Image 1 (cartoon, each protein chain N blue to C red):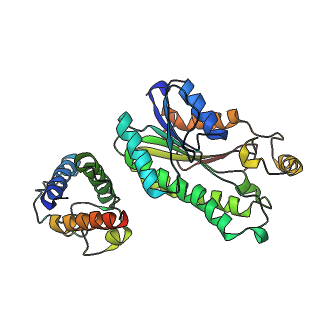
Image 2: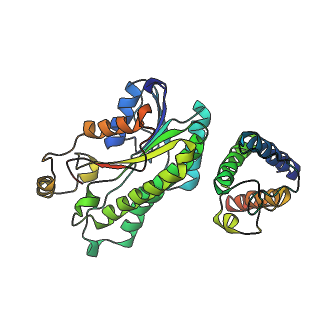
Image 3: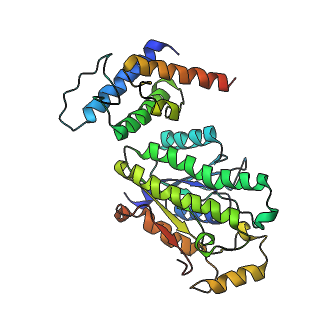
Length: 234
Length: 103
């Protein structure tokens, strides 16, 4: 199927990487169903915004089934919704841990589950998001890294479970990109982090797009359960 | 929701699933067909696929959005998959529970 004919669901589409990807695929002629927790979002042709908290099971069922019914199918899902909590573990309240795990882990799992159901007859592509925080074991990101490690393990198993239906599920794990997610992190902390990476610059949206394009390619039907870390990190 | 309506949707979904099977079995879909387990119609992957199709059928034909993959049901040896009636009972119980949840 041509890229321009695809129906793509993108969570976390109101800002950051999610918004960039939504604008890019919409611009290529895809129908993008974007979601976020806000009631309203940016508007454009081929962009269908739905308010949805991805950690709310009923809301996710309604979102994914609604999109598949409205457009007749669902070809791809980009699970960009995520939150970060940069804090020392000893100072992280349970409420922060719970919020982060609900959105990053449960949210990703729920969207994957419903998306794979919608793709069961036609096959499809799911891309989840992790972070270089997992392999780099960055101090101050214990809970965030743990949540992304959970996403990685879930994706590996889930990819095997949905393979019989022609659905692939992979992960892109960006290096630090200038988005709201790292807005509260001191510049010197980011600089120190970049120095530890193989490629000594911050990540860009285009870096992420390159990997997403690879995972969404028709020719990538033999690629599933994989994590690609950016920034020369492994 | 009318029990007979649910039952007819279950039969419709079962017939479609049997038509899609390519294992050479000649299965007659009757009230007594065992859905899962020893000598059951479906293996574990087939059951997952059938349940997802059943969710779709309920949504499309009866405007009922349910999640049928309750882990208790899936782990019960003599649970909802003994025959068509036990499966219909199970769907009715999920619909009822869903109604209670929604107040």
